[in-house]
View 1 (cartoon, rainbow, N blue to C red):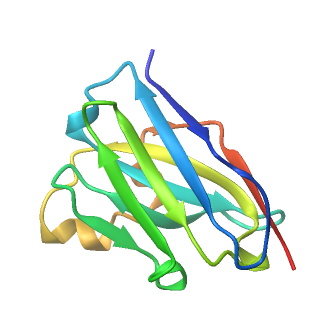
View 2 (cartoon, one colour):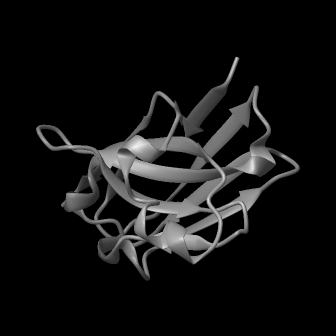
Length: 129
C-alpha cells in the first residue's frame, strides 16, 4: 500500500518553530518528488514547498527564508523546518508524492495539486498571536 504519514504539527506562538516530517512507504521513494501543501479553514489547498528527485527545493514566496525542506532517501522521509511561524500559517499541512520531477520545466508545475498522486492525512499547525 502506498502511504504517506505526516507528523510534527502542533500549537505554537507567533515566531515559533516546528519540524514537520513526512514518512513514506509502499512505493519507490527515490523516484518521487515530495511536496508539502496546506489548507486553512474555508480556503483551497495551496502549495508550500517541494523537494525533487534531483534534491532541488522549491518554495512559494510567502515561506521563502522561513521554511526549509530536506529529504533522506535512506529513511524515506522528508522534513519541513518551519520557522518564524505566523498566524496566517495556521492550516492542516499535507505531504504528497509525484512520480519524477526532473529539470527546469518542473519549476512551473510543482505547485499544482493535481500533479500529485499520493497524499497523506495531514498534520495540524496552529499559530497563536
